Length: 227
Image 1 (cartoon, rainbow, N blue to C red):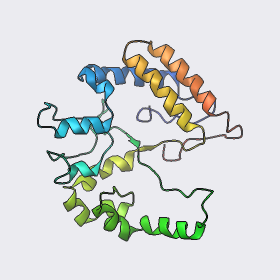
Image 2 (tube, helix red, strand yellow; image 1 turned 60 degrees about the horizontal axis):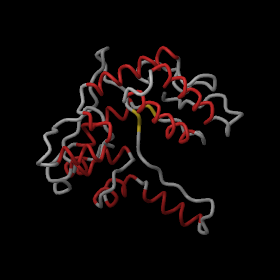
Image 3 (cartoon, rainbow, N blue to C red; image 1 turned 120 degrees about the vertical axis):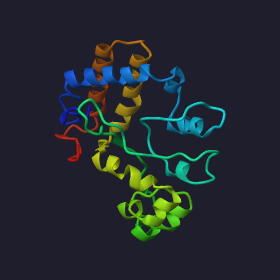
Image 4 (cartoon, rainbow, N blue to C red; image 1 turned 90 degrees about the vertical axis):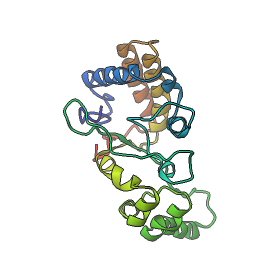
């Protein structure tokens, strides 16, 4: 949806225009129809485990979150190479969703200053490019992604995928979003399995979106400016 239109999560009235939403679902099913059936039962880690397995015939995956450890020697039986996302019908590279986890401090923390200092250190360019990366972490700081030593360690993973991250859509961060993601994905899954029509799935996803906003009655625009 984000690749086609800027209306995704742009207002509290609609999740996205129905035209764009239905087109996105149909395109999704076109892709799935070209994949082995068991792809619907795998998360990205399961996909990568299949790719590194010497017994499994899979050699390529067009869409999945990037995990730099699979581009390091010794992490898997085989080394994976990562690249930027493919282009769509328009000829332009598609937009993906920016993933990843965050580092937060609990409101129950008894040593806020110490925790804040630690978080600041962990996220610093130096730590992200060295200690954090060298011990299996996947850095979030751009300096680490552009670091030559980091790219040597991970066989160009960061350099070869950075353009995709630069174009990526940042998921909404309002309080109820995870409810939407958890429930709406089941509607997409039901549609891809042939258990629901695109219209029925989209209608229910729109309802779930409204449910997710109930804790945010004063919100006017929840889309990230990057969207």
